[in-house]
Length: 298
Image (cartoon, rainbow, N blue to C red; front, top):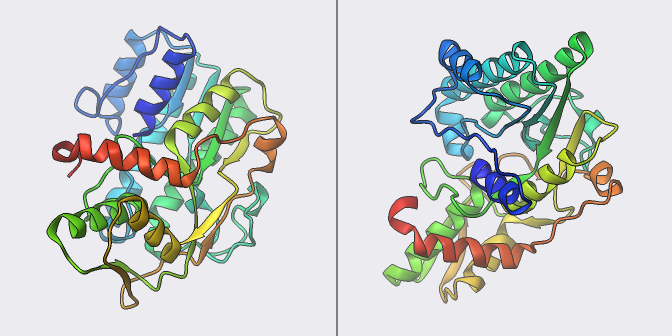
């Protein structure tokens, strides 16, 4: 999802010599394969969008895979970027790096000030390691490796598999299935009370381009919309957008995850960047994409 959005935005801006690799073409967890790719590729800038990602269920179920695969991907790409003379790299992290009970909105300096959310701790630890690896290479080798911490992302090419998806595509999928099957109600995980911030993936891609074309003073930047919504209100918004006439109910026996996650994106906003796609419009676009690609996204 993220990589394809960044490629679209770069091409729209006139960039042509863009090298991309799918999971089938290059296994980033294999050190020798990554080294060989860098050996045969002339790279000026790396945007590391590849990661093992998922929602609460996937994070909590595949804990070993989440920490191992993300650590290996990051270590291989960041180190080989350095050894092959790449001075500029953008590492995409996650808002999951911040403490579970972090002060809100979450500023970059709140990193490592408290315990992480248990359900996604392995993923968060891996992302923190990637951020710190970029810092260490900058300090020792004089590279310019930047870390962007995006909030919850969604959009075209999202994952709608209910076993591994994030919250927003999961809500879209559940409410769509309930609508198609004529169910009078649909049950969503948790209490509905947690607050979340969402950013359309095309806005993240735009932020990446904005940063590429400038020289930010900071090596770590949050990227968010600045707006939050409860999961209950999100369910109602999706139901309204999909024109679902049934009831949206919640199952408090299932986990909520972190109570609140709102990024302070002030550093990036002060540079002049702002997101353009509202949540309602973004949900509509994402649902239309799902309808056009439902066989691929299921």
